Length: 531
Image 1 (cartoon, rainbow, N blue to C red):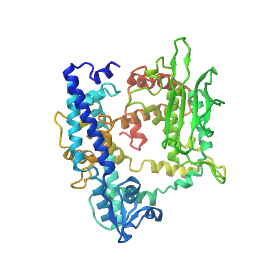
Image 2: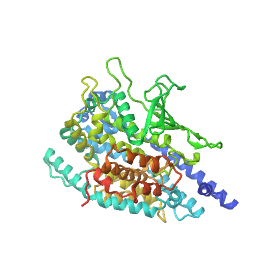
Image 3: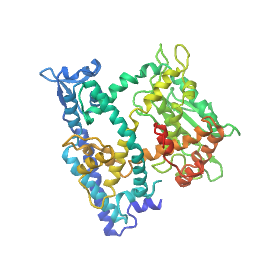
Image 4: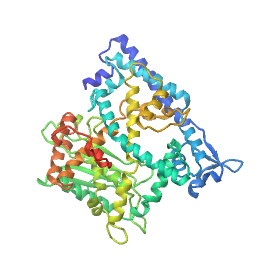
């Protein structure tokens, strides 16, 4: 709380406080303008019918047509991503990728660099060396040095994997085209990677979906984690906000004592929140009379509704999302924190996703997949052969994907620790070369549309990787001792879920693991065994 006061300028003299307010106001305006420039940036690519070869009729049908009968492909995700993955025309992809990586324009490059300067000035006014030092003071990582050491160590270990994947993709591209290319360009990687997936790792998500009726998955999930964490879920008749919502009372399996109330609001309706999320409606805390306020938690999603012929069926990615959000539910529901301020998910921003990311790991386990699947017509569980293909496809391209995440995190951290604001374009190109070792398209300015580092993830992009590494390390304890092991589950419940933010996160991690976290289990999970 005191750190919060300090960050709000309460230690400053009246004169410095006015300066602080003015700098913050200017920064806020830059952030708004930066976002606005991305949203309003329009530079569609005009293509002929021939250049749309490789794309489906439903995609083509949605495109705007020009007066001369051509088509306009915009820079919005629903247009851009399928085009880059499927359009056979190399030149058209190249042209679109160039436009895409100039979104936001030169004015956003200027806004980004001005914002970096303002953030450094604000941090120094508050007595910090850099903006990253200020932001990390109250996070699990504590300081930029720890973050950079973490990222560089991962980079070093991921590099050979990324290199091998690139080599493989270049060979595949050359074999398909008959050319002798020595690299893979930004407008090619998605296309060739997708083509290889389709031809060799083809997974029909619609077919897999038939094995995951939502009720089977939900029942399986509650039974699984009820067993692991020593709790039961009883349907309960309490007021709900819509007839689709189901309510449960969570009880401790051993004592039968009530632990929390839990709502499931899983199907879409008009005006409802569009994404999947967990909401802590009432936080758990110790009341003045010594009794404990039971938490009320809701999981909200938009799974497809049952029709008269078929039940609600989930894609495997949706099953993973459900397990992830359920991790947040358990974090909030099983809390035993004395104070609201530390209740449930009130933990450091770079730790909050770790329990949820850990729960995702169960949906990649063959035994669990068998337990939570049941074909809606035949009643059979997911076949072994399909599970093996899903697992094989999971790690295809992982090295490159995580190196890309690593690059974004290092770029963010470098900008926010520099003593003098660097040329953001030069830094982007230099770091890409160093970390990703693949060329970028000349005269592009990808950072002009990097919304994360302007809006909330500044000096924090590393958090994605940081919490994932911890999550994999947590899961490795279950792998060692049995993924259904209630003793390990109870230990996790006591040391992590119940404590919320009432102890330092690194201490929580050490209490559960018996040591500090390391990245070995994470690397192993993506198919990279340490030598």
